[in-house]
Length: 96
Image (tube, rainbow, N blue to C red; front, side):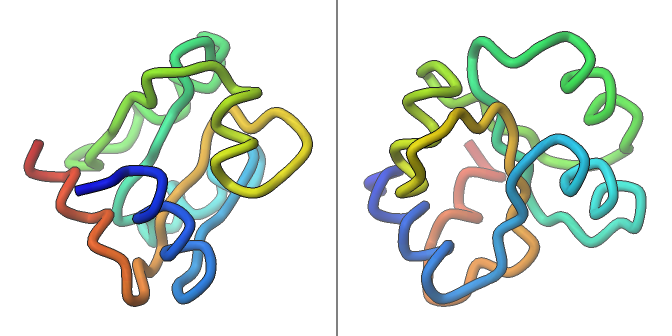
């Protein structure tokens, strides 16, 4: 699986929530299928995710700036949640 391609496809065809506050909300509502966190994400972001039970977490091997670029954005993204993968196979990361 090509992570970058799968992420872009999920953003285009599914529902992906970007940013700490939005991710915190969907995690609290148990709507997130997978959470992806940048390797340099603040401890506060990781603490939010740690409170959720049985929530798959994937650590992106890159900075929040790089994760933002992979999402097609020109700003840093430290965390994102996949709510609906759409036509993407990104949820296969849950088994990794």
